[in-house]
Every structure is written in C-alpha cells, then in structure tokens.
Image (cartoon, rainbow, N blue to C red; front, side, top):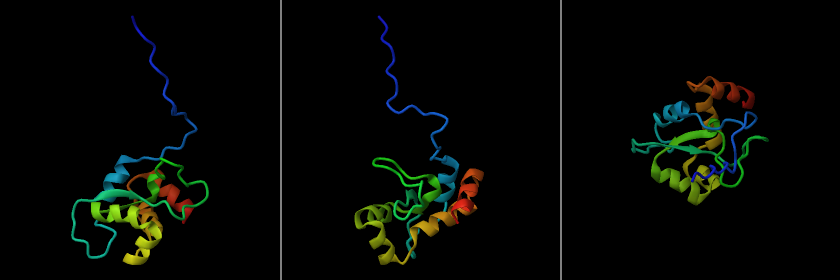
Length: 120
C-alpha cells in the first residue's frame, strides 16, 4: 500500500524572497574574522540581526538575507550570540551591519550586489 507524501508545511513559492546564496557565503568565509587581531583561519558565515532595514528583518527561527552576512571564527560567532550584537560591537569596536553591507557590495553574486546598492 502506498501512502501519499505529506505536503511541506511551508512550500516555497515564486513570491518568497530567496535568502541563501551559497557562492556568496563561501566567498565571505574566505575572508578573515571580523574581530581585529583574531588569528583563527577557519571562518563561519554569520548574520547580523540588529538594525536591519525595514522589510529585511527575519522572524523567529529565520535567518536574515545573506546580504547581511560577515565572517567570524567559531568563538567570535558564539560570542556575537551570547553577548548580544550591541555589546559585541562595543567590545570589539566593529560595526556588524556596515561590515556585512561592505561584503555585500563586493560580492561575486550579482543579486547580492544589487540589493546592497538599494540599502546603502
């Protein structure tokens, strides 16, 4: 006996904005950690959540658009979440949103570059 396949809870439709860009993520991870003087070489792709422009905020259990991504090592990525972004920025003297948008502006992915022009 064959059972029907369950429908996905959140089907992807044409009007849902694409948020993940593997080529952009890989390119961003190829840069050094956002924290000055960090010597770690293995990077993670991290998202900024604080201060995103209207229409670009992510809901609960959602990641923001990849245009709001920056590189950090595992330790500093963890600190970003545990300290909170405002404290993290103050402690390390970095601006997460401006840094992420700087990467977006130079991205090898045209869609990310075009979005960054609208945001800057």
